[in-house]
Image (cartoon, rainbow, N blue to C red; front, side, top):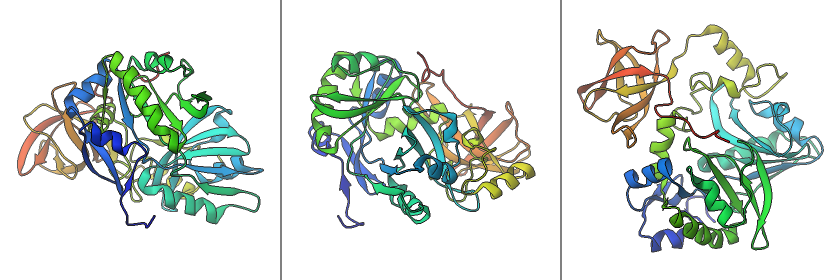
Length: 367
């Protein structure tokens, strides 16, 4: 497929049949909403929702020493986990900027499965391929697997209805089968709710989606698009690559230093990040709890009480749970929780209070 040709997921026809509003997302035609963002958001927070996120990247690194190789590349420390667990990590450039944030599934010391963001899959694969020593193979599997996220308090009931495994710990995965076909079931997600991400083979994704839709509807849930996915993740304060993270924005700026193995001997960008950590002179991410009337958007200036610009919004939205505006923003180091600020929304000052996310109660790690 040519690089500039728009791509579609393996359940694209199902989205069309459901009347989804489609839009381009990193070169993929993906559903933004079906019944509406507010309804889909509420379904996930209160019951269960199902997302097609098959546009996400996939890659496999395998060979003797694969774990050690990946550990020398990405920020987090794979020695913190054991086979059967997944880990949030970042691929950085030499300046410490984030090329991509991704999930690494540790299958064994010789096999690591990766889920990068859709737009960055090819670059991550290329960087790994260039750095790989002899005996280490890096395989682009972007369209080898679909990805379906089942998120919400009723997600266990949905998977149980299909005979899929549930109840394993957060950030662990099980290699199971459904209808005789392999599917990976991982306790991960991007909504702040209890949930799972399922990885069937690409050509089996449609059948699994159909069965899940039935089970989700039986629990009062809804199919949900990327619009609700964004409002849900913003309520949690989760970083989005291209907004809170980028080639110019570092893990430290995004408050993601917890995903850096500082004691490791090496990883891409280590020297730059250590210098930044020591200097403590970059802006860092905060939440903004809007108290005025208005919805902040990315790139809006943030000002202190004196009118001095102290930062910029990286993500802003209307929170369906709170029925008001919320935002994530990069602010000067002098900012503190509880500070009153104003956001310049199209030339109009909108009052807000600095807050450390999440904005809502967290349920993602519930057992």
